[in-house]
Length: 543
Image (spheres, rainbow, N blue to C red):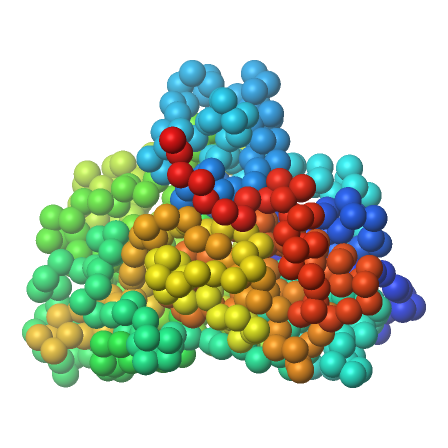
């Protein structure tokens, strides 16, 4: 079982150079949306995907969609959720429960919006089916399991990307390019400026930037008094696993740490569809000693984020001080080689599979928690070619473009007007924990978990999708957008990625038509086309 979708193929390939108007790199939800939009605008397009399975996290476990204000989700993104609704309108879609049994609550608003003919919560395989439907209907040329040669695979001339070459030797020539990866690999290989980690408060004058030891959100912090040492009260015995000995830094200080990754699991209690949690080959119960100490305090929120999705399944997300987020174990991922990333992903798989087995089987786990957890298992009818494990890890943040415009908390919180919006965001500025450390009092604590809600939906500037003019004139970046760490916490939602993917492709098509850099397109022309295609660029409060 490979935790990354597809194994890396190396060596020269037989294919000659192929030429397209637009080359989209990355099979995420943004990548699919970009390719579909380019096709609808009459442009030749190829979707070069490192993945075997399209759709990114939307098709890899994140079925309990983080939407924010649904009224500002338009265009292809809304069409995607409409097609989800269409799927679940059929009685044949409900195999493991009756539709009436599912209920209709999610994210504080209905999961099914009948009046708008949309559905926002779904099973992973259904999302993948919808993405594949888009691709088939538009005859998108998709090259799966095709990885960019990040060292020598990008040819630049006069500030323009001319071609990209993969590790298998295939070369794609394009007039314009879109980097739709979660990692920002194409933009980095092209020499475009980017950032990794957290800015300090002084960089953009942001209140919520950098280290935030006192700002805690979602209850993902330890109860007071949890001892971090192998022998309680004895620092000389050493720290328990998964606690950093490094100081956390001063409040507001910037660093290169990034928020935690993990897998969004699809679980069920239906016996006929349940795969019991298996014991990993490298299982080490000592890795979860810290969780026992949390449970010993009486903490019982283990199942708080088992969010219901159709067919008696849940999208199991991180919740609490010690959960599915593998805090502090991903710092090398954004800029790591493919081999380094594979190693990090495998470590995350081992950690999370071990955690599941531990909670369901270890006799030291309180009986009430263990008995309940043992009823759950992986959904047998999901991720059937990957041991029922999600195809993708949740890369919540990696590189971020340093582009023509930088989105910050000031734009997200409506403190400043956003120039030339090409989509809207509205979700909480949400960062998962970044580090686990020992406090001055000698207890264990997490840091970095932030949740700050915008007052209203906000625009996302076109300039946050474009590199600096002198660096690349024909590249757009709709996922690793130009933003601060804290602003990215709101922007980084799957509906927004689809919105920005569509907008990026629209801009690319206009730039191709006029033979100009993407930085020089007429915003009025772009806005008119986006509006015509259903994108929502301004917030109108409900009457």
